[in-house]
Amino acid sequence: MIVVDMLYQKFPQGDEGEMTRMKARLVSREALNFLGEEIGVEHLLDAQTGKGAVHASLRGNAMEALVGAVYLDRGFRRTQRGVLKLLQRFDLDSRIQATVDFKSKLHEWGQKRKRKVEFKVIKEFKRDGQQLYKMQVMVGGKVMGVSDGPSKKSAEQAAAHEACRHIFGDD
Image 1 (tube, rainbow, N blue to C red):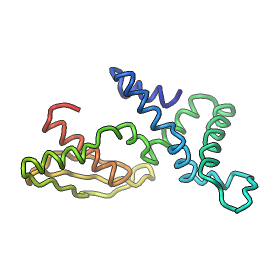
Image 2 (image 1 turned 90 degrees about the vertical axis):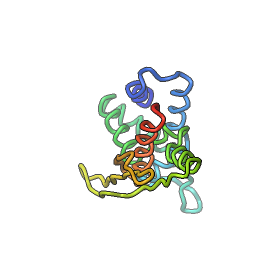
Image 3 (image 1 turned 180 degrees about the vertical axis):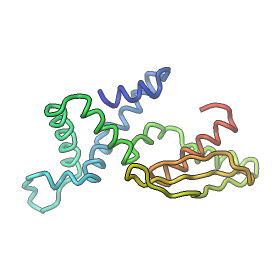
Image 4 (image 1 turned 180 degrees about the horizontal axis):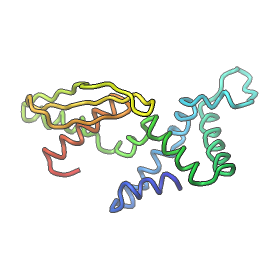
């Protein structure tokens, strides 16, 4: 419900089918397993695995249980804030744009027109304790997009998206 609400707020005129695919990427077993691993949820588990290692799917199941427990204990609004912070912190929000790889689109366009596409980190900084990167993309020596994100990859993708808007005039 939290992810669906976030997507609706971000894309109020979005296509229903595409929004369903976006939601599926964000709440997939892979995404939950990743989040569980990143926050170290296995340290909260009392599991008898036999090998001493926790299987990835157990982390995802534990993430679901943890979100449910927070909801039962603290209510919807606090759970919503926490989940949205996790999505942002671990860059899962960029998964909603996974169907359009703006960086690849920009590189393909540049190759066809013999224009050099370059990405450059112009600043590394912290905001609210979170590491961020400001990235610029230059096409043929001209700055076409600047954006920041919690990883170099997401900042590049966002800068490329901005450049694509200038070049193609759409999203």
